[in-house]
Amino acid sequence: MSDHLLFEKEDGIATLTMNRPESRNALSIEMRRKLYEAVVDIETDDDIRCVIIKGAGDHFMAGGDVISFGEIAKKEADARRKEFEARIHGLHPTMVTMRRMRKPIIGSVQGAAAGFGLSLAMACDLVIAADNAFFTLAYINIATTPDGSGTYSLPRMVGLKKAMEIAMLGDRFDAEEAFRLGLVNKVVPVADMEMEINQLARRLANGPTVAIGRTKQMLHASLNNSLEEQLNSEAENFAACSATEDWVEGVTAFGEKRKPEFKGR
Image (cartoon, rainbow, N blue to C red; front, side, top):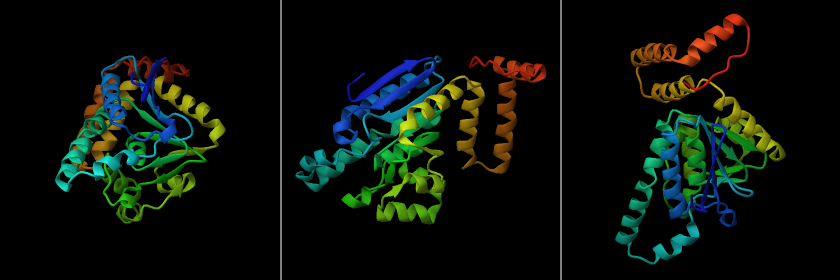
């Protein structure tokens, strides 16, 4: 993989590290392309059962590479419009693949999660934040609108009025506020981040992969489904899980009063 994105795989866990610490891991064109290639590979790799997304150094991601926008700002308005429309459309397959893949994605956030960094964190299924993490949607500060599925995720997570405040004002808030709003699952001391993330990833990677993946899909679908559609989905997915080896192991282990040993199939 590119130096802008490191890809490691070990014991069923894939770790993607955004690797531009000198710019707070600002999103480069190369990073965007490699991120898409990575999530596509992960989605189809049956050996991978959990994903971690994190940033190198002291920050998660400070958003787009605004410094590089200076050259684009010299172009005519129509050229600027076309360039950014193409760039942002280029992000969409990554966000769709993250949502679609039946594998849990953990965001490991310390330092800045700004702009697309916040959108990316919201696109993860679970987020652990260090107590030094800070968040801002930030786009309004350069007179533009959010991307990377930020406007999809934010109102669903925090409610419409709070989403309006976060997006329109661009204020910065800390990890405890992010936890209160439901944007992160847990806040831990920065010194404990690696241990916490590894424990959570190992727990998920050792879990019943099919059931976890189907649960992820069902919860996302519930935001748009009717009650009847969701009830039908519950019946379909429970039945599908009952056809797996892990379901048999889970039921057997329960009866034998022991911890189940799931294989992800």
